[in-house]
Image (cartoon, protein in one colour):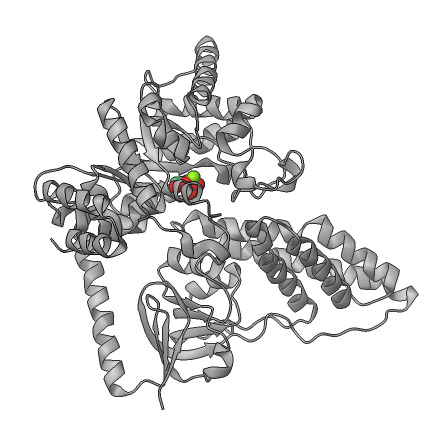
Length: 578
Ligand code: PEP
Ligand code: MG
């Protein structure tokens, strides 16, 4: 008999295959006392297992296919750092020695202590890192127990297409599985921002997370259908359901092919408005992914990834090499954002200054940190200016909230330019310096800022967070995160109008720009520069090519003027239909 289950759909697509369960992350708990004369040997057993786990994880890191989005490698790098971290290894060794217990018991003890520390953290993002600690410790425990989690295809036989059902899946296992014939992931834990969700989306594999008791309810080897958009899992489907979902699967595949035909077509609306669709990237390697998805340049290169998952700071030379590589690989303009560390983008503790603030999102973040630590900023600015010799570089400053900050930052750019000129370094003659509009104050003061900024780019992820006073990484208030809130829409409109009145370009690089549900609305608001995850470019391009911007402008006005929820929804529906 068929069984319908519902979790959270986090990666779109339909998969039909048989269940393959991944059994528990942790092998059986074994605890025993170690005699004093055998303690050295036990410590050695632990250290060897930890080294072996590091070797395995590095091998997985090296097997990441070229073109895989940068966040995947970043997850593995974080795990490598954690596995090698002294707070885990030293504590385990001293527990073995002081309590005379075996390596497994000592390692679990260190894990529980570390997790308790993370549990106390105010910052919800850091609290979610407990999950990473569990993954890392499980890997070492599995080596100790010589019980490697068996993955499809591990024994060398070609893997059957399968739907993986697990409690949770580590980023490393996702990479291994994505190279096998895995059709979809179903996990008991996790939410839309969990690693499984982010990685599955990046890899284009359908996924449903947060489906409690999935391992109990689904039987090994039984056929299931996974609908990654709606979060449905249908076990043992009947012929009617199979026919329905096979048809939807075929439609989606056809749709993907149709979208590919748009790759080299221009993004021009039916009434002749030309739109620029660019990509957001995070690692130099992402540049090729952007191009293969038909993006016309890069509208946001997030540079903080160069600073994360390491204990030291990147040197000017290292940064220059990375930027020059990306700039050389991107056809068209590339907007490089200066360091946006702090809040949801923490660096390794070795680089952090002072105690963790109470409200990191409102703290010393992004341009504030750079202006407080000008030496850190100067290194990056010099590297960016030097990279401008290789292409069309634009510099973008994050989290600007006042004209003073913009002037101070521009002053540093000017001084670095003079220095490099004296040193005889090649640079582009004109390097636009623009700002992100992601703080309500900047949107409200946009007419003033537009006089001194060369361009604007609206960061809706933060603009929504700060306007609606909801922490973007706090699951408890996620339900309030609303890109369509009238306050948000008004701030977006004010920014676009102020920029255009001053004759500067206005782009949008927050998630909203890549969400096809908002394309018509944004076009109607007058936006013509969009930057997004590369995989969204073609879908947004189709929406642009189907739209008549002139008509949308009038309809958007009705959306903005709506006085209650009912008329708002009516106006919005009309905007989507025409
Ligand atoms: C934004 O805030 O919308 C943005 C693009 O920047 P980030 O998500 O990196 O903060
Ligand atoms: Mg931001």
